[in-house]
Image 1 (cartoon, rainbow, N blue to C red):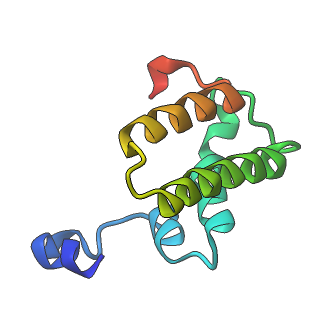
Image 2 (image 1 turned 90 degrees about the horizontal axis):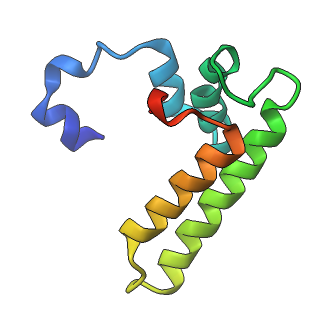
Length: 99
């Protein structure tokens, strides 16, 4: 992040509180939860009742994909990203036009 802000110093203080929480949250689960919360009111399957379960599924899936890359550096990361996005869209029932 320091490298990014050395290139774009004007953006260092311009991000929202939500983005700040995503950058500096205690752990991946909490940071991802911040990213999901705005989707509760959108046309998605995420509700205030299931958001923790959805977050657990998504973070576990992401961890699995990262472990695949760590265990096999030759893994096609673009393909893993594509598969992860498909899973994300499916789990959250995100309409592709909001992406």
